[in-house]
Image (tube, rainbow, N blue to C red; front, side, top):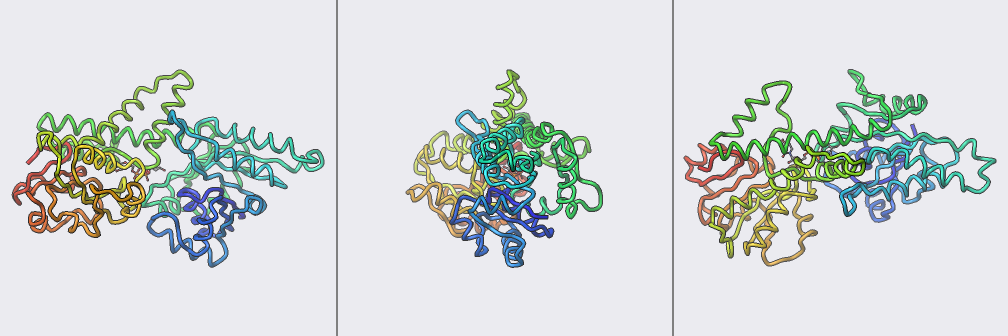
Amino acid sequence: MKVTVFGIGYVGLVQGTCLAEAGHDVMCVDVDANRVEKLKQGIIPIYEPGLEPMVKDNHQSGRLNFTTDAAEGVAHGDIQFIAVGTPPDEDGSADLKYVLTVARSIAEHMDGHKIIINKSTVPVGTADKVKAAVQEVLDTRVGAHSVRDNLTFDVVSNPEFLKEGAAVNDCMRPDRVVIGTDSKAAEEALRELYAPFNRNHDKIIVMDVRSAELTKYAANCMLATKISFMNEIANLAERLGADIEAVRQGIGSDPRIGYHFIYPGVGYGGSCFPKDVQALIRTADGIDFNAEILKAVESRNYDQKTTLFRKIQAHYNGDLNGKTFAVWGLSFKPNTDDMREAPSRVLMEALWEAGAKVQAFDPEAMEETQRIYGDRDDLMLCGTKESALKGADALVIVTEWQAFRAPDFDLLKQQLAEPLVFDGRNLYEPGRMKKKGFTYYSVGRQVV
Ligand code: UDX
């Protein structure tokens, strides 16, 4: 099928590439000429395992193309995905300006029936706004009457559920494909589009548009709730002399609870959870409903991002001036270079504020860190995890990259001023750390 994807950000690029990989003929459109040029050369703007070779392959085979020309994009596909950003505006609501600009642009150039699909995470009711924006432009087009009857369209909600770092797999082997539409024809077209991804058992769930829009928020908010809940219990465990890791396994074994997303840590970050929880709170506010649980989820997370810093501060009786900390892990989670809402930022900024220095290492996010913070005296970006330790007063672990799970503990001891580790992800066994002679702080467990 011929498909156009507007927006070559994270969602659009993964979606477009996977559709091409499945055999569809895909045109990706973006206003950023530099990005488009690089993609044509096979250089992708994000770090995502497995994506780059797939982009190159499909581009070379002619199934995946890139352009800045909206008219070309609209002419290409019977199916038009909108996958542009919906950044939070000042009050945390999702800003729809990019989505509506694309909708208008589709209306401007279309010359036959189009299925317009919202792939971006958009508040409930956005499909109606897209519909109105498209119709408004169509109504003003020159000679509308003669061509107007062919200028029909459907607006469908088809939210994405990709995880950064596992996006290709999530897209090629989805748990579910949610399609929100009241049009049988659009439903049929999307069933055909997703047929290559719908093997073994039917993963397609069709519903009305508003329910599909809400499904996306509900999924992310539920996951964020699990995390904040677990972080709350971890705080209790710490204070009650219990071990959250034992508690986690104790509750995860109940299939109604399950083992996923109950890992305590330094709070959730990334481009989705913080933004979506906030946006749903704003949506609720807008209809005079007090989303109490979501507000608590958000405030627990805000607080959780400062826990490591508070532990460090308490250890040094509040005096961090002149201290140096090795920080391992800067991206908001492993296998990505994404620093958006990353807990590492809250930690480093608090350390700097307190007069401390940071020697940081991350397997992928060094460039991104440099881009965000530039050159500063109190930040040294280190080429290896070992070099970050040199002369530091203590090690602080913020992100659970695989490479941090089994370090050379003897070297750690040698390099650090004292054997002291603050671990925000519970990577090590407290008993073992104690035996090795470390003072070890973790989350929801006792200090050893
Ligand atoms: C998330 C959703 O998982 C995905 O379905 C949606 O489409 C976009 O948002 P992503 O933001 O890529 O994906 O990351 P995810 O792996 O879900 O992790 C989110 C955050 O939660 C990370 O900061 C992670 O460290 C944290 N987390 C996750 C925990 O603290 N504990 C857990 O048990 C799980």
